[in-house]
Length: 433
Image: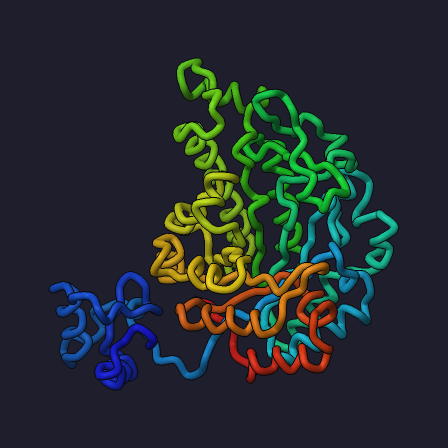
C-alpha cells in the first residue's frame, strides 16, 4: 500500500477484498500510478460483472492479506562462529532466534572444501563425510543439519541450506588436490584467487563451473541435501559464479573455439562478448540445477544471495537479473553491506532498475550486515537499515551473520536483544509467493 495515494487506499482495499482487482503479470504488487490499459479495464469489468466472473485466471487476482508477512533471516556459518559445533548451543540459538521472531535460517553446509553434514557424496570423493578439521570436531557423530531442521520446523521456521563456497575451495584441501583438472585459471596461467576471501588463512582456487565433472559434483551435492533432508530451499551466493579474470584454462578455451570457428577467447578478460558467453554458460548450468531440484521436490525453492548489480555481473559473471527473468530464481537476497545514507541509496529500487524488477517479481529481501566479528554494527544502524528496507517495499531482510546479532556487539547483551525486539515486535509468517 506504500505507493497507493491516500485517497485511493480504501477503494483499492475494497476491490481487492471483493476479488475485483486484477494484477498481471505480478499479482502481489499493484501499480496504482500507471495509466490502465484497455485489457486491464476489461479484466476489471469481467470480475465486477456477475455474468463474466471466472474468465480471469485466479493467479492474477490478488488475495487480501490477513496478516503481515516478512522474510526475517540470518546466516549461520562456521567461520568466526561455533554455533553449529554443539547440539545444545545450536538448539539454544534456534530457540532464541524464534523468541525474537526471526523466521528463516540459512545454515552453511559447504565450505573449506568440506560439508558440515554427513555427506555420502563427500565420503566417496575425499574419504571424509564431514569436515575433519580439529576446529570442527563438534560436528562429528551428529547431523547438524537434521538437528536444525527439526528444531526450526517445530517453531514454524524455514531452513534453507547455504552452499557457501560454491565453486571455490582451498587450494590445499583434499578435494582441490584430488581434482586439479577441475581448476580454472587466469590468462597468465595462475590459479590463486585472492586470499582475503578466506581471511588470509588459505589460498582458494576456483573450480571450472563450465566443466561437466564440476557441474555433476555440485548437482550431486544439492540433490543429496534435497533428497535426504526436509529442507525448504537451497541457496547459493556469488561463489556460484566465475571471477571475471578466470576462464583461460584449456577446457574453456577449447569450448569457446568450438563455438567461435576456432577463434580464441579475447585477451581482455572484460571483453563484453567474452563476459556474456561465460555468464550464459552459468545460466545453462543454473537451469540444470533448477530442474534437478524441482524433479525431486517441486516445493523446494531456489534462492540466491548475490552481490549487487552491476558488480555481481562485472566481477563474477553472476547476471542474477537475467536469471530471475528466466524464472530460475524464486528468492533473491542481494548483499547490500554499506552503512548510513549509502545503504539507503544503494538499496533504493527507484535508483536501480534491477532491484526494482526483482522486488516486483519474486520475494526479494535485502542482505544486511549486522557486523563482522571485529566490527559489529550498532543496533541503531541496523534499525535504520531495516526501516529503509521496509519503506522500500521489499519482502524482508537477512542478516550476516549470527554471531553479530548479539553475541559480538558494541552494546550490552540486554540492550542488544531489546533492540531486536523493537525491530521484530511480533511473530509473522515468512513472505513467499
